[in-house]
Image (cartoon, rainbow, N blue to C red):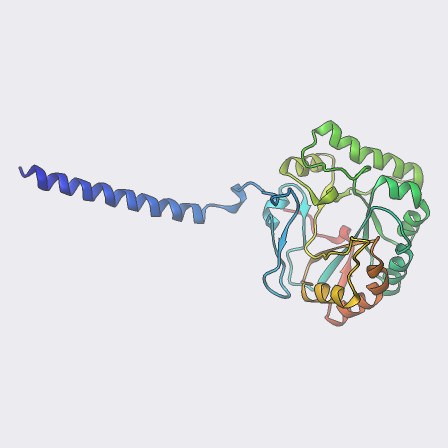
Length: 271
């Protein structure tokens, strides 16, 4: 037997098996179900979006299917031209009446995610939201980072706002939750689910929260018209002077593009 030739043949076989295993492994990773992948927040722990094609939903930190496991949403998976309007309310500085006026004019129902401070200082506006057919959602009492909280602390943040809300308006708070600061984790979404909440992220927003650097009307329209897409959950801040000034015109422009507005209670249930 020629041992040198046999040894050379063995080396070739080993190399072939190694290369074949490498590519087979890569293929298996590519076709593995996405649902087995952990949902990863951005580097700063925040919800993140990447807009890649005008008129189409952005690529998000998690897919519709991954979020569905936790009764969580960032948009509706649809080709129908519908929009879900939501506002985060940290405090009141005079813009909310104009926002409510514009919504009423267009017959559009929105969801206002409030914190404890807002409810304490502006109960009449919260009552007006309800009277005009809007949903008032839970943005936590103190607006902390809730992504790493344990069950007791997490429940307390939502529960304290629920209690004050019911004392103030005389009815239970609806179970819609928006993570404060946009920070989240799989654990926090699971805790919200266990408390009966639907976690609501967003697929369309712009930099409207900085009181010292408000966008111009043109800058706002540029972002909000180019990035709008079917099924979008829109996040705007009630503190934005720009939003108060442009909302009527913005809704008209979206309507001109063929969009209609739905309330979050019309959002199809996950799964």
